[in-house]
Image (cartoon, rainbow, N blue to C red; front, side, top):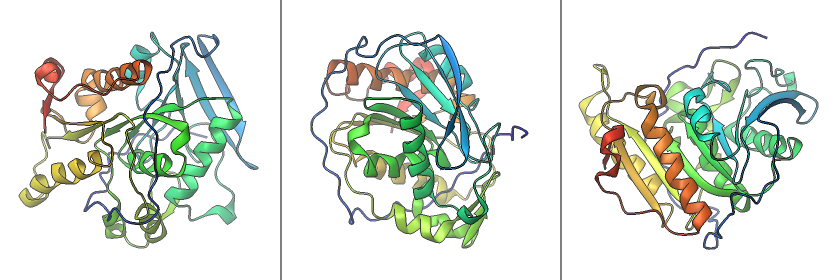
Amino acid sequence: MRRLPVVAIALSGALAACGGSASTTAAPTPVSPAATSASPTTSTQTIDIGGYSVDIECSGTGSPTVVFESGAGGGMDAFFFQAADISATTRVCSYDRPGNGGSDDRPADASPTTVGAMVDELDRLLDGADISGPVILVGHSLGGAIVQLYADRYPDRVAGLVFVDPSMPSTFTMFGNTWDDGSSVVDMRRSEKELAQIGSYGSIPTIVLTQSFTGDTEAPASFKREWPRLHADLASRSTDSVHLIAVDAGHMIQDDSPDLVTAAVDEVLTAVRTGKPLKACDDRFADVGGACA
């Protein structure tokens, strides 16, 4: 199966109300870098997640594992540069969602899929790949929506969160009741309802990165003003969070400001390993293209 290009699609809109199934998360427990036994420097596995298989690639050693979730139509290479950098200090894993790269298509009876179904696929993948212990999830665009719901459904499996210009749920139906994300048909209405149930992330260390619409001449001025506020609402779901603007980046922050994404992951990794809260936002991100929101 061919590898599809990353599609830069920002599913945007108002963050769904904070009602629904609230998750409670205890204060983070320090995670030792040596808590996970050494694994091969780079390994690729094909994991059966329920009658169809998904490819996952992991590199580096150490704990916690950082798992990257690509945007629509993207795959395991979406965070190529960040994975290469971060694998020097801990284990990192990237994968192709069903229908992308070398991964199987979903069964015909699984279409259209939903964000919730993708969340459960990720959980089965982590089990099948023997990725134990809480992980740090890094999600871009549609992948950010998957990460939002995963952290709500499986809080005990999440040590930290990094959102890279994540999609916001309440405008999913702007694309109609269904939408082709580049690999699968997604039921947008059902996905929106699933995401509307997200509650608090407790004190999980969380960093949210928001684009500055660099080079974007089409987005309305009102939307450009609203987008940072929506991401601020997302950051507020955790009591331990930092919200940054990628000052020279469009939607593909990991490509436009790669070092900023790496710095955000490193900050969350440090917080998880030490059990200490994230430092309050200041000018330490300026050299890598970040500014406090």
